Image (cartoon, rainbow, N blue to C red; front, side, top):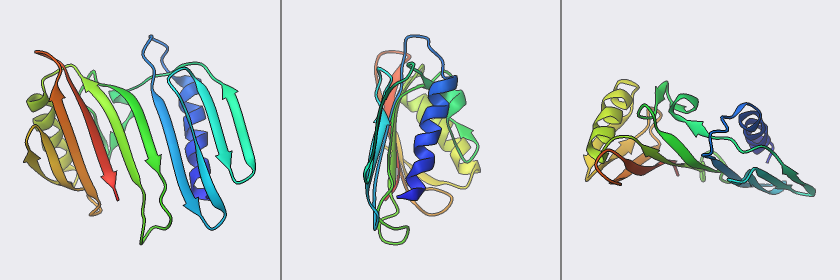
Length: 167
């Protein structure tokens, strides 16, 4: 449970310095441990809720948005101009049996093939082992965890996607 507390602090830090351009990002986290269940997040309206084994918080924060410059995987940012609509972190039970998962949902100002190829090149240089999987990618992170990128075109120069890591 204690390892999820930094996630709440990170969410608060993001909210404090976020961009208020009308777009907003939601962040959620959950996990189980011998101490109990921890869950919480910030929704797209800026409502922060935390429930951690007897500790509960419900606060209103300013809306914030996370974009390509605020997010990276081993030094690799998302495609330039991308915006993140949600980040979901499931902390898992323990590092060996249930290491947890992260899901990031985003939109990019380019078609799916362009975003896929751009990320494949850069993530490959960062140690990821990836192969094309339709309009997305699948493979492993630099530390051997599962990685999947799913993309779909949303018009001529726009795509939406999800990244799943871990588990």
